[in-house]
Image (tube, rainbow, N blue to C red; front, top):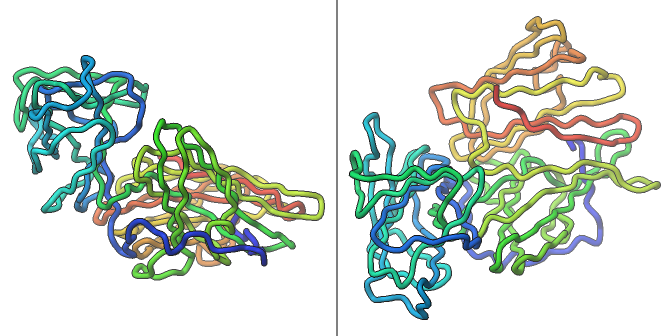
Length: 412
């Protein structure tokens, strides 16, 4: 990547004007909870459920909640009393949770239910989303199993403090998600684009999208170019993906771009499977790598130490360092460690909000030759006095074949 991706003359614009919602240039995307159409089990009224596996990813405000309900006991309609309240909780130092805010009651119905949260609820990163269920139980909330999932279920109408009765349920979760917009941020492709580069490279990006759910979803892709200011609105395009279907458009099929940037992915429903193939085109074919979508829960934060490795051969290989920040921007201190464990050079890097950056290894360290430390490593430590939501990565490209690879920084 790094110096990648070529714009093809036959590229065409698809549905840029048909965006479902406005993506603000400088707003913080906030999301908490999870949403799938797996219906492995359900929960009727008389309980309060807290989602612990996907707390809110950032400070900000949530305006919309979507939940998935279904019928129980052979019912064909929800009862009038089947209602729910949306609650946000903050873990406290005692035994339980502190109520931040609630909205509702709202009426349950079969399928997806989307409700506005008015006024918007201000949340902090780490707050957890909950739903209180009421009514006779003709309808109920759906849930599913997964090793990454975790919920807590309180008996009755729980609102704060030490619960009288609670069940900790690892391996399970319920289908409800709240976000700062009508569609939720589900992940970021930190590097993507269409460009020519060094050594005769000609790079492009293809997207691989699978909707694993039983309902169609509409996705919005928001491209932010390198060098775009924090108040620059992204280029957006939408893609409808039917239930259980897959699509594989080239980036040039979705939007008209020429350059390198990053892509945020938003969904109106369940979280899709999305990855990108970054590839170089030559007279003999293509070569490249697959890039995973980074979910909001996996980005770097303040207090994190992020590590990248440097190739052992910097003559035949070239390395670039990429950064994608979010609405708060980021500051971090980065140090090059030689292969024998000696600190060679350090630098402080500060980035504006919603910034995408990609620099050669030496340029990242202010063009100091000591940064070219074959077989060494890079440690970046985020500062603790600002919010530092960011994705740090590197790309390594063969100078002869332009074959390339991408590595997301690991937290250690």
